[in-house]
Image 1 (cartoon, rainbow, N blue to C red):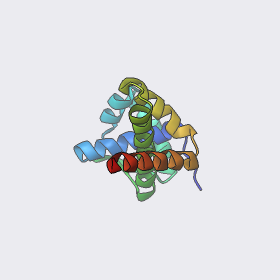
Image 2 (cartoon, rainbow, N blue to C red; image 1 turned 90 degrees about the vertical axis):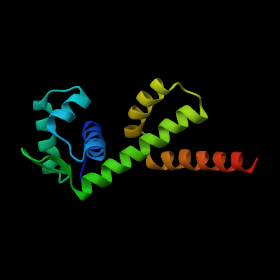
Image 3 (cartoon, rainbow, N blue to C red; image 1 turned 45 degrees about the vertical axis):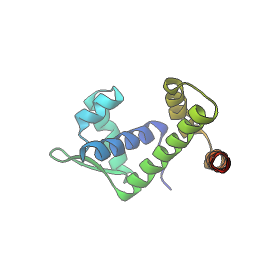
Amino acid sequence: MITVTHAMENYLKVIYELIQLNGMARVTDIADRMHVTKATVSQTTDKLVALGCVKKEKSKGVWLTELGKEKAESVTETFHILDCFLTDILGVPKDISRKDACLMEHILNQQTIAKINNYMMRKIALNNEV
């Protein structure tokens, strides 16, 4: 099993989002979105290439391998679960919940995330019965 750092997970998530929005992820766009230099993006994406998570070419930008896409989707889903939980269940303001969910997505165990998601699904089901 490969080890992807929290920072690398954020890169995968941003690459995934850019591909969803624009059909591609360019180094410049990644740098702008993450508020880092293009050199930093290049170094990190080189590491992700070595891990088998992304491929890149100057003319085509950066794209996700199947492994990278799976990891990006997992992190994105975890973020959305936590963001919804914080805002919809706990009433945390959106600007705070987005920052907190981004931090928590890397730290919480997947079993905890699953329990939070199950709790929200039960709460939604109960609200729909009323």
